[in-house]
Amino acid sequence: MSRDEPKVGRGERRWPMVSAALAAGALHQLLPESFRVEPHWLYPLFLVVFLVVLIVGDPGVIDRDYRWLRVTTGLMIGLITAVNGVAALRLVVKILTGESFGSARELFATGAIVWLINVITFALWFWDLDGGGAAARALTKDVSRRTFVFPEMTLTGFVSDDWFPQFGDYLALSFNTATAFGPTDVSAVRRWAKMMMISESLISLILATLVIARAVNIL
Image (tube, rainbow, N blue to C red; front, side):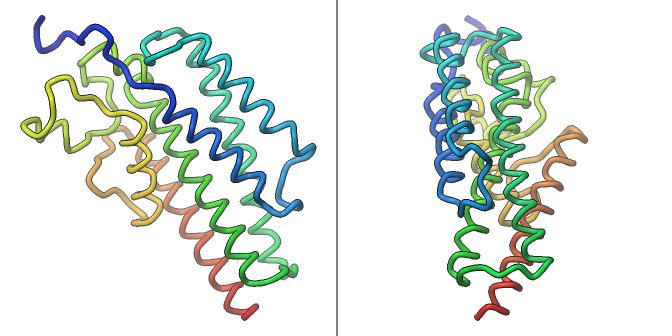
């Protein structure tokens, strides 16, 4: 087998992505009632349905590069994005219009939850869009379609020959982008990815600035 051919059974486990999606759903349920979508049970139900379809359609490692699986994954991530977008918008509007919060602690908790879900959301998008998706990355070692250049791709002496980025790597990318307000050790080589990273940094900056400023006023 040549270095350019993927190993049999190559692919990442689905549980990290499943855990992230479930965490996004669970965190949303911890928000104050005015920030959650109605009815409250509908959103987690849809998430579970999407995840069951994905697990049944591609059990074990993610190595089935089917269009319907990609579409299902995109719809699920889109749902998480829309729901958290509504919560973030409500938070921003409530701060800017001077509506009261129960306490500074409640404001900080709400902002932190929205921020954390935002990190998970962008991690899921980065993971799903890079190189045609997780299954495509597992089935080929061709990097010409890749969007992100991880340090392991150039520092090959520190990783195994069959290394490829998995969800944890994209979660670290998203977290670093949200906290450093820009790229760190991972480079985006496509313009759309650069725009997404700018968007994540901008959202994080706006949330942090507004929440902290409002909390200071409350205190």
